[in-house]
Amino acid sequence: KKNKDFQVVYKNGKSYANRYLVLYIRENGMDKNRLGISVSKKVGNSVKRNRARRLMKENYRFLGENIKEGYDLIFIARNTINGKKAGDVGKSMNRAVSKAGLFKG
Image 1: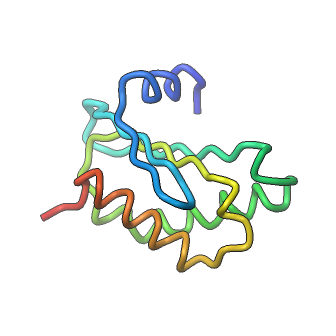
Image 2: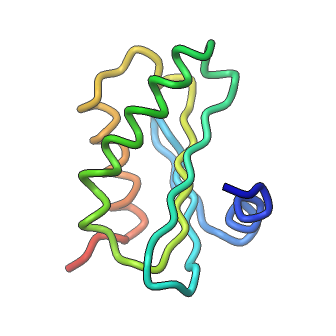
């Protein structure tokens, strides 16, 4: 939740981008993952930003159990996320996590 934590991940982490979002990752040295979600005002008004946030949180709920532990993950929504369905956002998140090599097994 703290800006300092986000800045450390932005500065020292790796990024993976696709059409709807950007994923920043960094090892955190803990035995759990920490999730950050960022939606800029460029995405739209508060209704659109909150919808994007809800879609990303819900899709992470399904992905979370398949992701390796010990990482800080920050998902940043791009303005192309507007009007997309949950399945599209889920596929985009899945691709970003896969590209980062964070899936178990």
